[in-house]
Length: 279
Image (cartoon, rainbow, N blue to C red):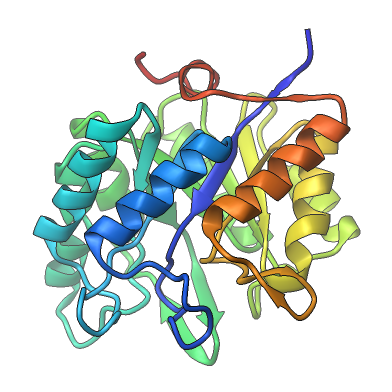
């Protein structure tokens, strides 16, 4: 039987705008529709950031996360992964910022993204507060939410290994290896092999590539035993100079690649078994 490969779609992110690509979803209904189209195209997991419905500015509003989560659950059995990224939160005290970031966890999705370390996104430097890692992992365990550990450099993997050793992350750990983010690991074959070599043997892992690194990184990830992520958060183009018409189009590209390599695309139920989630 062919190996099952999970496809995650990150439909909106925090940075892409409709000026960059008119198909970028802002409103809850647009995000839900993008998720459903991607599900039909082959994605088992959707990674969600919410936006102000009028302006498209990234926001942390519990009612928007709730609307998206419940809307997707009504329409399909896709696994929903809500973000806890703090990139666009500024000017708050540490405890207030952590509490705001953990609002999506309290809605009890099956997954929440869990950023480690510091990073630079388009000249915006972001550093997690000292108490973030322990507070986030404890909150996720208490609410039955599995962390998707987003790592942008090898030091982030080492930090995750410490959390795993302290039993703050339940097995199997799930890593998203993020390649090509500025001041993180460049999206090259050598770097992805190196990052994979540092993951624990029992880990479930996926990889993404930013912009032109998307297709090379997800192809390598599939060949190396990993899973893949696509979507507008990472890349707005189907190929050089050609905007993708939808997130689903990028999922179709990933599905075609996975099947051409001789693997099968995991359905949501199969992805739950891979991740150790309840059916």
